[in-house]
Each structure stands twice: as structure tokens, then as C-alpha cells.
Image (tube, rainbow, N blue to C red; front, side, top):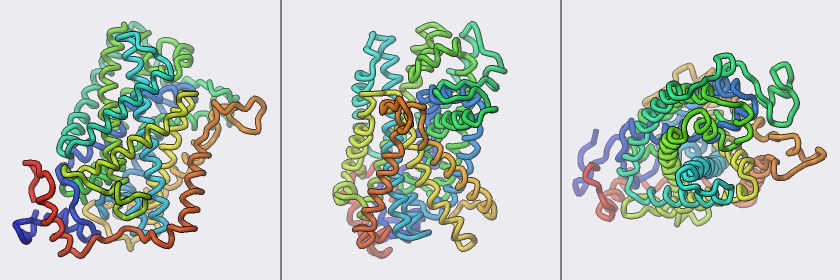
Length: 530
């Protein structure tokens, strides 16, 4: 829908009018439809990435019950969180997403902390996705070419796949949108194929009782079932697999400025990506767990648990085929995560929050924030350097940082929206009165997991215990706490004096003139209409 041409034949769409009211010019290409917006969040959630690469976390901490039932618990809670966020995304469809929401619903201080937690979480989840891909790729290359399956070579593989994801993000948004569309179909078809293979090919399957009631505690903590309070904690640690997988759906908000009918489509894309992922992911996890050939073998395989299950329960050829499907899906996932994170960094820099913001908010002729893409790629790569010393713990901690950072950023604007009550002005999609209970449940859940995933993952990871070992310590409290102290101190000492939240780029008329002027400076794809 357009309001008619401005000077020079430039037309302002309804999406651009909303963006103008928020104070921003249309600098990014609006080349995505509703399905493509859904696809990027669905791709970043990536059930062929997260829950398979982190399968060992749940199997080690709780066992099959933490997989079959834990996934459903986390899936339900994450759906409520996504619904709470979707309502706000509809009201403020901007690439700044979460920190913009907090700034408008609260104050610049709320926006500051939301933005930094979101950015840290985006970098961490990109790193964890990439390293998970490296684990699977190394396993596949090992089967194909006897490629060394060691932590050093896995880190090298990680460096390569991260570079590929960055280079793919140098292309124009119509290409990344196409990749996300392909990815969505690849994920759904891939899950169907893998599940079918796991039902038909293995000669033996576990019992229904094993999949839905078996408990395992390989953490080193005491307790083997829910009769022990300590086992409840261990089961909680196992939920990290599910919670880590169901992250990244804020991408629908970050891609809002590149989506048509963003006030509705960004909201729908956000919660539908979670719902579809929960359904497909549960079926996939059940199929994998039914195919478990030997419990101890899976525990010994650690990060290679799924590879072990497939190579042992079937032929090596079948394992190679399934690993290849997963590696392609995970490459899509990593590429989409870099896309989302770079848009968030671009938007946060547009409002001058990040040092060197003039560089990170620059847009190339194809309207891609190239410098922000490179920055995300490098920072994500650097976060996984500790895996050189301990790959399993480094990956587990990376997922913890991702979950805590992202979900804190997810819930801060929800708290503010709930506090505002009926004074909140909804967009095209709203929860109505249901926000009152949905927001509360979402807030309580995020509080629980944020505390839980800061806890020790093994007895020898407790600093005051005998035999303490830094190699198995959960350093998430240091990174998350350090980030809070750093950004908090920065705010008190300096940022409160100059960070005023979202910065208007001009009046509506000035923004239209800016868009008309810059339209001639950018490459305009054939399918883009102004």
C-alpha cells in the first residue's frame, strides 16, 4: 500500500510510514515476505542444529526423560515468551527490536541494558551454532576422509565455517532471504527424512518406557531420579539443550525493516517459528532417542553423541547421509544468525550505543551493513577460543551465555509492557487481555532459567570444593556478571550522559527526502518497489 509518490517518483509505503513515525529512514531493503520472516527465525532456531549438537547435554543431565519431556516443558514456556514478545514487535517493527522496545516502554537505561544483553546473546548464540556445525562437519569429514576428529581440528573447522557465513552475508538481502526460504523447506523435509530413516533402518529400537521414563545422571552430582532434590537440579541443567535450541526467534524483529507488512508479519513470524520448531523438534528427538544403541556409548561420546547413535545403530553410509543433511541445515542456521546479529548491531550503532558506531552503522551499496557483519563474525569466533583447551565445557558454557544473554534481553521489554498495562498501544497483532497471564508466566520462567544456567555443571566445577578444576567450571557467571558490571559501570560513569535511546534521523518529510536522495546511490534489485 502506498500513499502516492513523493518528489522524484519515490513512494512511501505503509511500512515506511510506521518506520518514519519511529524516527528512521528506510535504509535497508524491504525484500522479505511473511514466510521469509518466519523462515529466518525458524532457521536460527534450527532443530537440525541446536538440539542435535547439544543432545549430549540433556542425555548427560537427566537422560531420555530430559529430552522427551524436557523439550515439551521448554517448548511451552518458550512459546509464551515468543507470544509476549510478538505483541511488542507488532507495535515497534524496527531492526533495533528489543532495545528500542525497552527504550520506548521504559527509559534509555532500560534500552541500554536490553541492547547490550541482546548483542552479547546474539554473539554467543552465533558462536554456539557455528561450533556445533564444526563438531558435526568434523565428524562427517572424519567419516569421508579420515579428517582428524580432535578439538584443535574442530576449532579450525569452526574458523572456516564462520568465514563462509560472513562471506554469504556480504550478498544482497534478496539472496539471504532466498537462502532462508530454502532453509525452511530443507529443515522440514530433512526432519521428515531423518525420522523416517531412524524408524525403518535400525534393527533395534529402545522401548517406550526407556524414551519417556529413563533417568540418567552422569554429571557427578548425587541422585538418580526425581526422589532426590539434587536430581531436579541436574534435570534442570539438562533443559539447556532445549532452551538453547529455542533461541534466536527475535530475528523476526531484527529483520522487520526488511519485511513487508512488518507490524503483523514480524509478530506472526516470531511465535510461529517457535510453535513449528517445537512440533518438528520433538518428533526428531524422539526418533533419535528410540535409536540409541547403547547408553554408556552415548555418554562416552559426549559432543559426538548423535554421530555415535547413527553410526552404531545403522551403517556408516546412512550416518554420512544424515550428517550431511544436518551440516547443510546448520550452515543455513549460522548464516541466518550472522544476518540477525549484524542487523541488531547496525541498529544499536545507528543510535550511537556502540564504540565506533559510525563504522558499524555504515551500509554498503547493496544495503548490507558490511562492517557489522565482519564484527559479529570475529567476536563470535573469538568467544569459542576456550574450546581449544576443553571443547565440551567451552561449548556448554557458550550455550549458557547465549541463553542467559538472549532471554534477559527478551524479557526486559516484556516486564515493561506488563507494567504499562492497558496504556500500551498495540500494533496490528495483539494478545488482548491475555497479556496479563502470558507476560507473568514468561517473566517467571526466564528468571528460573537465568539462575539455573549460571550454576555449576559438575561437582569439580564448584570453586570451594576439593578437586576444583577450571576445565569443567561454568564461566558463564564470570562472563554474564562481568558484562553486567561493565555495561552497568559504563552507564553510570559515562553513557547516561550521552545515550538518550533511539535517535530520530529527522522529520517524516526529511526522511522521505533522505530516502529519495539515497535511492540513486544504492543497487536496487528488480523485485524491489519504491
